[in-house]
Length: 127
Image: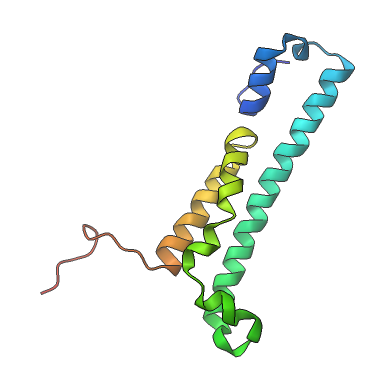
C-alpha cells in the first residue's frame, strides 16, 4: 500500500507501525476496508450534522415558537448546537480530514449566522 495523499492519518500510522499492512495480504485488505468504512462514516456524519444544523436554523427562522418541539431548542444557549463537534472533530482528524472543512463551515454558520458574532475591526465606527 503506497502512502498517497488520500490515505487517512490513522492508516499512515498503522502502516508505519505494522509494515505488513503494505503487502497485499487478506488481513491487510480487511484493515484497509475497515478504515475506509470508518472514514466514510465520519464524512457522512459530518455532512448529516451540517444538514441538521441548517435545517434547525431554518426552522428557528420560519416556525419559531409556533411549534412546541422547537420551544426548548430555541431557548437553549446557541453553543449547545456545537456539542456534536466534540466527537466529530477528533474523528475527522484521525480518519477523514476532508470532513473538517464541513465542520468549520458549521462553526462559521452557527457563530456568525445564529449567534451574530461580529468582530470590531470589521464593523465601521459609529458616527
